[in-house]
Image (cartoon, rainbow, N blue to C red; front, side, top):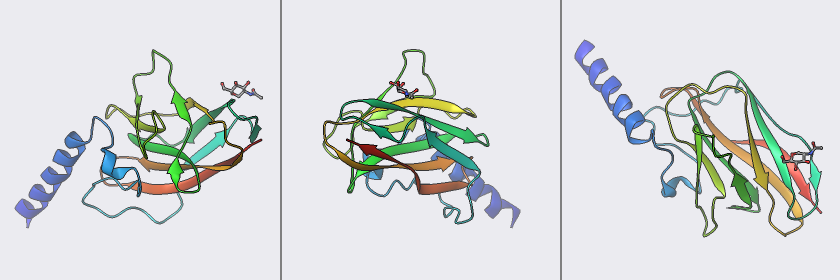
Length: 158
Ligand SMILES: *[C@@H]1O[C@H](CO)[C@@H](O)[C@H](O)[C@H]1NC(C)=O
C-alpha cells in the first residue's frame, strides 16, 4: 500500500517537473493540465479582476490575480473560442511567459517556474476587433489541487 502511494506521488512529481516550464500547445483548447488527479469543482480561492471593463480596440487592460498562493497558471482571453490579443510582460517578469495558441502570437500566458505566486498583475492588449471578451484561467495551487478554465472576467472592446 505504502509503495503504491509512493509510486503515485512520484508520477505526480514527475508531471510537475515535466510542466514546470509551462503549458504545452495541446493544452490551448481545453486548458486542462496533465495532472494525474482530476480538477477541483468546488469554489476556487482566487479573485481575478481587470482595472477597466471597457476599452477601445487596441488598448490594454491590467489583469490582477489575487487570493491564495498558486504555482501554475494558464490564462487566455477569448472572443468566441480562440485565444486572442497579446499578453505584454515586463522584462523583469520571471514567473510567467507567453505561448502561442490558435495561430496567434503571445496570446496565452503560463507559468515558467514552480515557485509560489501571489497577487500578480499582468497586462493584456486587445486586438483591433470590437466585441465581448472573456478571461479564462486554469490555476494550480500545487500538483494535486487545480481549477480549470475558470471564466474570470469580461472585457468589452469598443
Ligand atoms: C489599466 O491598465 C492599462 C494597462 O496597464 C492602462 O493602459 C490603463 O490606462 C489602465 N486604466 C486605468 C483606468 O487605470
